[in-house]
Amino acid sequence: MKMESIIRVLAGSMVLAGAALAHWVHPNWILLCAFVGLNLVQSAFTGFCPAEMVLRRLGVGGGCCGVGETPAS
Image 1 (spheres, rainbow, N blue to C red):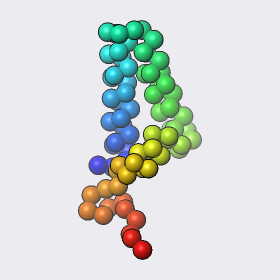
Image 2 (tube, rainbow, N blue to C red):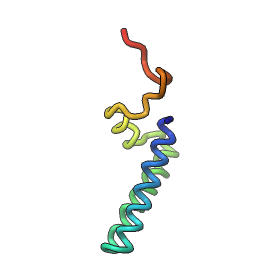
Image 3 (cartoon, one colour):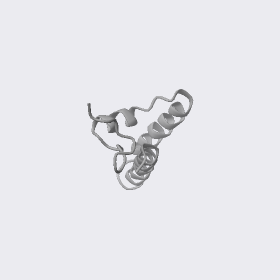
Image 4 (cartoon, rainbow, N blue to C red):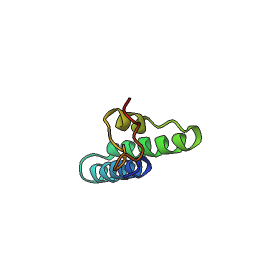
């Protein structure tokens, strides 16, 4: 799966989780949705995405069959 798709799945899941928690647990959980939305907007303008950096360090989104991976030296 491409990194862009992984980021979209992560962001969508966080928004859905925040909305569900705001509905069933406490209204302040809506701040999670606001944080994710603001992060998406700033990353569209700046190209800086903290989630992408974290996922890359964890080794997620490297691609299948060597696609997107750097060759070993």
